Each structure stands twice: as C-alpha cells, then as structure tokens.
Length: 329
Image (cartoon, rainbow, N blue to C red):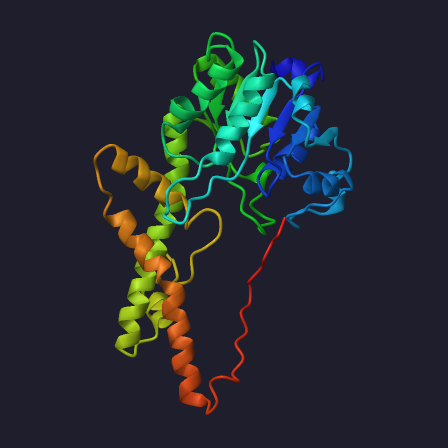
C-alpha cells in the first residue's frame, strides 16, 4: 500500500474537510494523490477555489497539491486509503453524537475494496472504532476487517489558530487492527509528520489517549476556575497567587478561563458515556465539567455586578467580547 501511494498508483481520501481534515488532505497532497471529500457542496466549491471555509489556511497552502475536491461519494471509488476526520459532537444532553461517523462508515462501505485501509481520526470513546464503526463497513461492503481490509485509529491533534504546533510538528499517535496495518499506517503518516509517530499497542489505547489529553486539560482548568471563585470571595488576586505558586519547579501553570470549542468541552463526555455503559459513574471528570460549564454564567454575573457598581444606567452599558466567532459553514 505505502509504495503504491508513493508511486501514485493508489489514492488517499480524506472524508470530512473541516479544520482537521483539510490540513491533513493538503499535506498529503504535496506527496501523493488525494481525494478530499465533504458532503457540504458549498464548502467543496470554496476549496476548489483555494479558499478554506474555516479560515485557518491561506490560498498558498493549496499550491502544488495533487488533490481533487468532491461531494460526490462515487468519486471515492478511486481511493484505496481512507482517513475519516468528521465531527463528533455531543447532543443537548451531552450524549455522544456519532451520526457523522456512522454516515462516513456507510459511505466507505459502499466503495471499499479488498486490500483497502480505513483510518479514523475523529475523537471517539475507546472501543468505538472496532465495536461501532467497523461492523457498519463490514455489513455494507460484505468484506471482513483484517482479512479483506485493514483499519486503524490515529487521533487528530490539530490546534486551530496555532501556527507553531502544526500537523507536521506534532508527534502522531497511530494504531492498527494488527501489526502489519500499524506499520503501514505509521509509514504513511511519516510522509507528512516530521515530528515522527508513536505506535500504540492497540486501537483502543490510541482512542483512550486522545480522550484523556483533553480531559486532563479540562480538569486542570476546572481546578483553576474553582480556586478563582474561592479567592475572589477572599479578595485575593488569583493571578498573583498563580504567579507565586508558579515559582515552584513542579507547579503546573494552568489559568482560569472559559472552556468551549470542539474539543475540551466535549471529549470528556465521550469517556464518561462509555464509563456509564460499563457500570461506573465518573465523578471527578463530571465535576470538572460542571464547574467549567458554569463559568460563563459566573463571569456574566461578575460583569453585571461590575457594571452596576460603576454605571448608573445598566441597560445602556456595552460589553466587548473578544474572541467570539460564529462560523456558518
């Protein structure tokens, strides 16, 4: 597979061209032949004109790339190595929403052939790839995992807006359904990841590694947020406390703040969902989520208190929110 991709006798397809999938597709397209697939035809049209709908990449990033953008799943029949990078949000009840992933599996099941590879990058709970995704592909295609096609998991580590920690500069965790597939997947990703790869012992280990990366950050931020609430009641400046504590060599320098976006505020719920299915109710993780989910209301309340203290007319007060961005596409 690897050599045929290098010789452009086989093609790699990236399914889902958001802020994760598009950078991956373009990096590979500088080395091998790529098909970029997204169900949103308007997004595809923009990318065909070297425009990133997520506004993360410049037009020059599209230059010199051997890539075909499409929203027609039939085009995927020409692909032999599939990378799934679709969104995995939670619903209004914080339950994992796997609709995009399952639809991607259904699409792959219609076009996959013997000898093909499927690698998932979307954040999921441990076991999802093998227990939920692979059976869909097998049922639709009539093929069997391992014997007919290979699967793997390589968690995305894209950090939107970060020009320093890019795909090429971050170690890539890879895994496969067997040793052969893991080795091949590692070699393919080494084409674009200069920092190298880390081979996980199993797909579940790779899935779990992704989940705890953001869960750990969520909990550390939650601790800082709770401390800031306590210190505020004591009329102590939280940042001065952190500056003083930070003089110790092993103090972790996290800061209080709002937690949102696609990852930190979502990924922990995937782990707690799976944990609950197994009969264990996560306590520390959900406590951190409760604190961080409540910080927006806490900050809003503090802002109102400040306005009331210094302004006679609250209704006419203006609040500047810096960093708020709405993306419709």
